[in-house]
Image 1 (cartoon, one colour):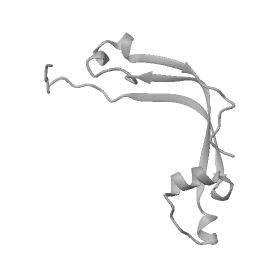
Image 2 (cartoon, one colour):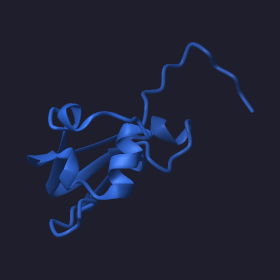
Image 3 (cartoon, one colour):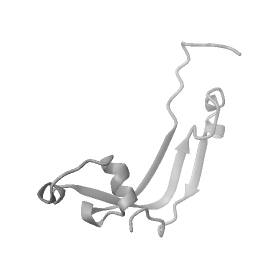
Image 4 (tube, rainbow, N blue to C red):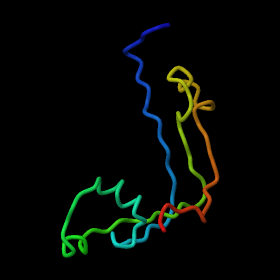
Length: 93
């Protein structure tokens, strides 16, 4: 295996476009709120000032370097990917 520290390899990325809508913390699914807030405790007044955002993807997810080895990322055709977004998919209840 070669070790070439002077070769810069970009980080893997996933990009997409979509529509975002604000969601009050009280309306988030409990498991989603727990992940986002890491079990933080706050008063009802403080909870009213916390807002999450539901992002509904549109079009395609465009990837670079996902599931590709670092050496494989040198080949841009191999490193690129595209997957259709499913607009019905949502992590919000």
